[in-house]
Image (cartoon, rainbow, N blue to C red; front, side):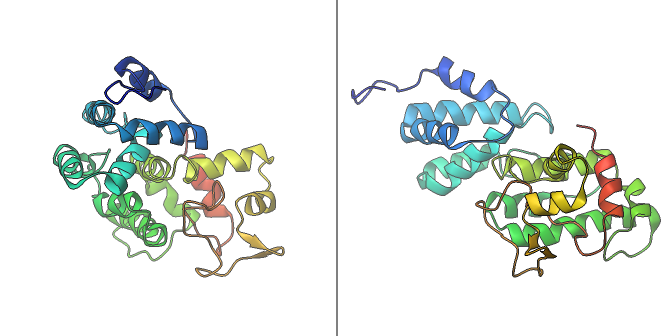
Length: 240
């Protein structure tokens, strides 16, 4: 770090190195570095240009750190910088309009703005709509037999949106990882992701946490009051 006003704290090469690491979760140290980069106008422009470049490659190239940067620019930058970012990436770091089944743009906006309770409800609705497209049957929730009608592409995008805008903390694949780590014991999973209160499933929605400070894997909710069979089939569809 330097005290000279015009000298960069991070070179372009250092910034690119930071961005090319494939973080599974953003810890406080990495977040602090991103905050430092975003303070300086030149460094901020470098990091914004890099996430724009990566986002334009394809829908699956965006990384967890890209979502964090996008959120922080929206939250902390001046109006001109925000305007420039939105002009280049109007949807967010994932261009959801290119997805063939349903448009996830409303969900992406909710997650960018950390409106997690609304995003959770919409995620359930999206999954039901996906199944409805194939079965022509109205769905308010999913049974295990419905999971076969959820294309892996859609499940991947839903999971990616949650991970990208939560520092890697939330998502179905995060829950699956915790489930496997605990020998596929459901009670252990509920305990680890804080879905239990004194051994009993928490009341929805008031007893769940709807902020970025929630424990890893706490969100999104999925049929949490309807047994484990549907979630088991959903986990089996996650291959990434």
